[in-house]
Image 1 (cartoon, helix red, strand yellow):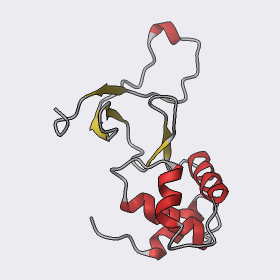
Image 2 (image 1 turned 180 degrees about the vertical axis):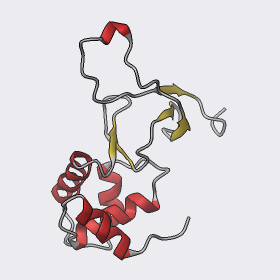
Image 3 (image 1 turned 45 degrees about the vertical axis):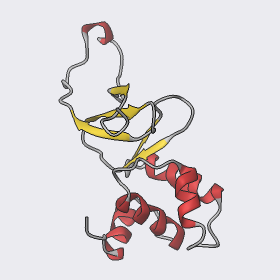
Length: 138
């Protein structure tokens, strides 16, 4: 995958009403470069802090929260223990390997209608999550 241009990142942030600070740009660049990994905030912090010494954990968490709130990224909690971040915004499912922890996206076609049992509910998010053992761990 090609590195994304910094001007594209600035535009993405500005289009969502987010001021493109150095820290925010680095976090968004990291998410673009590692979109298949579904990183946690801690992984992002540990990877970027040597390169951006002014980066704090609070900045990473606050930035990720604003990215989620504006629809720039999705958050994903599979086991309730930690939150992962996902750049893929189109509907898709996730498979998490219980041995290595790797999370893999897979295509899924979610019906736009809600089940009849949820007729009077406003559904805001749909998740499909499988867990098991990936081919590398079998």
